[in-house]
Image (cartoon, rainbow, N blue to C red; front, side, top):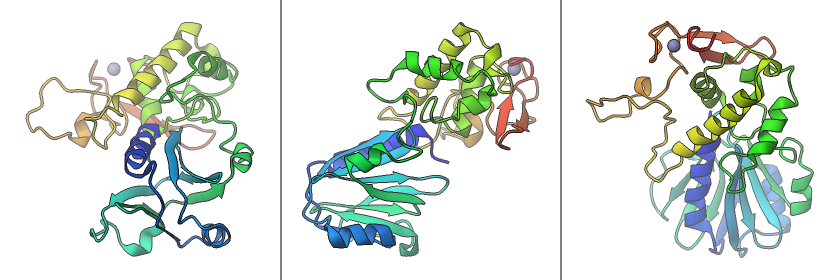
Length: 275
Ligand SMILES: [Zn+2]
């Protein structure tokens, strides 16, 4: 599932390709989007800005129209030159935004909606997002206070709650808890102020490290000392996520995994480093 870093990189790429450009063609197979395009055509508008907020992606068009998308498990945006062969089959296409120079194509985005600034501000699930660590104006104090306001939640679930802090998914939440030495099944109420500050700072550090210009499309939180293959091997880039049964990179204790009872999502942890 794409996490906040992936959406941030996608927004940055689309911003560079689309911002300031006139839309020459809009196409969608989603009836609600087609209807808006029919009533108030997208072609002829200018793409003003593309940005991410947590795991949401927003494309702002002139004339107070915003395309809000969420990738959930399988969605993605691609950029192509006119005539270039698409990397996914046309049956997966949901939205095409064409400018004189490029086509931006959304494949399999499960959530795609047009909004005005007014309707977006009232859109449930979006209007109460917590602070996003990748935002330029990230408000760490509010994120810490948000976590502290839910002492009843297990840490692994609190970090996924987009109203408390926006942008973390399954991978980052396990990696952040490990880096802070905190068991993901501890209740937030048992954590110290210092723990909470450390969690938020680590979440920001990990997300930022994955949106540098040279970062690939894979989440990396662990850098092995020696790279012999030169490949970013999937087995070699994370501390605990997806590594159940394998030795902890710090203490060699086998990594464990278990589901949170409240929602069945899995956390990975080292029982020695995260007692
Ligand atoms: Zn360990």
